[in-house]
Image (cartoon, rainbow, N blue to C red; front, side, top):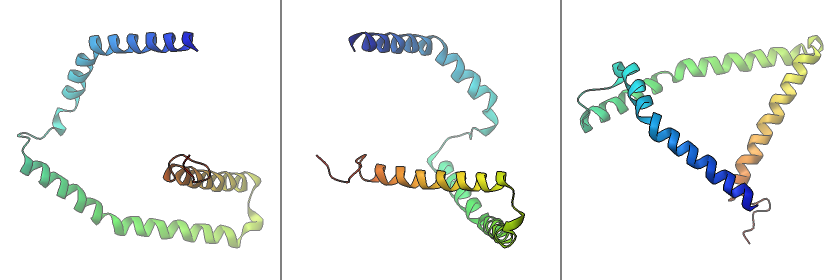
Length: 122
């Protein structure tokens, strides 16, 4: 176990050295490539305005998202009506999707209980 800790410390040291040498250059390059997205001057008022623009833009997109959702629901209903025409691959993908959703639900429940399986803290 001590050797694993030494390896981890060594790797962390190497990562730290790499970041100290190359982190600044990466940051400068990233900011240079994306300077068109930087708002000048960066004031509190401008940040609040951009935040409101984002919020109301997202709010304005709800009708389109709602329409897309109901199209998907109608598609699933149509598939269910014609379930005899489904291929094994389609059923397998649907089953895997359902299992994945259930697994994420279970993981969320465990996280919500503080990473305990039974819900009791010891």
